[in-house]
Amino acid sequence: MMNIFVTGATGFVGKHLVNKLLNEGNKITINLYKNDESPFGVEVSTYRLNENNINNDILFLKSNNFDGVIHLASLYLTNHQADDAVRLIDSNIRFSTYILECSAQSKIKWFLNTGTFWQSYKNSIYSPVNLYAASKQAFESIAMYYIETNKIRFSTLRLSDTYGPSDTRSKIFNLWNKIAKTGEFLDMSKGEQVIDISYIDDIVSAFIILSKNLNQEDSIVNSGDIYAVNSLKRYTLIELSKIFESVTNCKLNINWGKTDYREREVMNPWENGIPVPGWIPEISIENGINRLYFNKK
Amino acid sequence: MMNIFVTGATGFVGKHLVNKLLNEGNKITINLYKNDESPFGVEVSTYRLNENNINNDILFLKSNNFDGVIHLASLYLTNHQADDAVRLIDSNIRFSTYILECSAQSKIKWFLNTGTFWQSYKNSIYSPVNLYAASKQAFESIAMYYIETNKIRFSTLRLSDTYGPSDTRSKIFNLWNKIAKTGEFLDMSKGEQVIDISYIDDIVSAFIILSKNLNQEDSIVNSGDIYAVNSLKRYTLIELSKIFESVTNCKLNINWGKTDYREREVMNPWENGIPVPGWIPEISIENGINRLYFNKK
Image 1 (cartoon, one colour):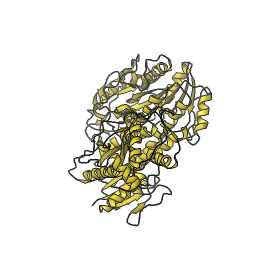
Image 2 (cartoon, helix red, strand yellow):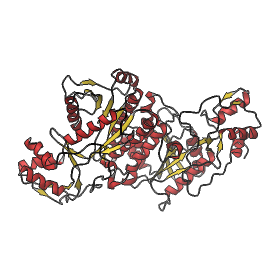
Image 3 (cartoon, chains in turn blue, cyan):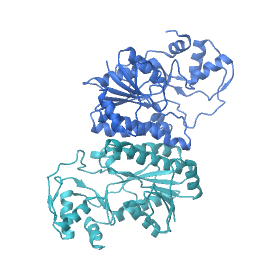
Image 4 (cartoon, chains in turn brown, blue):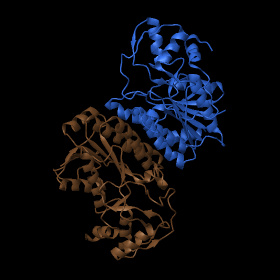
């Protein structure tokens, strides 16, 4: 059993992860941001970190004897406008540094951070697709100070696309499911970009395996290690649409090539990520679409 | 002649740099932070960036047709306390990103950023001596997004120690000058750390040469280039004290070895920095101490 403090628990990954951690018998406390309300029952404790009173928050974390922190909270923007820039900094660097400083001061054993494949555009060691990805990299630069000067074991799990039940984000399967039902036409790009997308259960199990590793005193995870959640198999967007049609037995009316690729469209997602030790993705895209729309395993 | 917007102009480097830029006939506007007042005459225009109204600030920068920005503003802390962490982020990442976003949106040609040798502890490509150095690295991670997606030419000049007239910081020469006058004893570490310290005029000329380079359409400076201000010669702290005694003809009562080195004392400052093309440091340590205390050239 682990005693874990989770940020971003109200998001898509967070909700699934917390439920799974609870099912496995762990003790979970979540941070609630601003006016967020807890989507969980009373078995999940809640707290609201207050960036204006760090000593109070350190005291709270200390007195709860958390083993680790899973940090999912993040502001995600594919493209930013001028006045979004500091919002991205506040959420993805300022708040992240705040909770890491609190965790280090509270002698919490480990900190599991979340990154993105988009930190490595065109498979570079570092080339950010957008300012969101740059803010994730910047926080890893900050974390390096804590990795080198503090005993806290810090690791980052970088994610690509994700899908699964109760996903309210305007992601591709939600979009296709909608046009499959209405029959309306959808303009898309040429569709030759390769997609790395994982079912939420595989994502959750990667987080849990990594957490358990970090929680061991003789952890094989070194502080600073960066891991990736790679999908079982990759498909181009066009191939993905064919699978979607086949599994759901629906026809998608897509006008391929009608829109341009994004300015920094990721044609080949990051290929050099190291998978979490001992983690094996299990859910094929066909299986995942079946689970999602027909509740079939 | 260049038309330059300068941040951090009220600091030690800023004051010297702005005066030199003015003497060379450039047009200078400085940003005033919070309640700062301008230390310059009416020939220097002033402005106060307001992080709550970016569109207004973009309009201001656009309408002034600045060629470039020299970004010196920074919060410097050798060691940080828990509640300093977000202050370092606010000043060194949030504000820096704000002004870079403004500059990119305003189509300003170039942006000269300031870094620190402390980003490379033990000559690593990146290993931060302290959270201050980590915040400087994090901003470079953010800047990479602008370097790769915007036409703005961005370069960083990394500084080590600096000294010169009207330096109010509690730096080593100020400390020694004080005990030389009073005869009091000073406890110091063993003094074997190597010091890389440059006279302010050499620092200023590095900034100006780099600015002029950045300002040329056929600049030999590539966006993203990182340069260093290396001193003419390096000395251990003990050697430096002997030179100080010899030039000032004073005896320093230093108890060497009475205090411990800092936890991450820099024994050998960064050696792999690339000097600014065409820049040659001119002022030896003897010459600099003479200028500082006897106004001799």
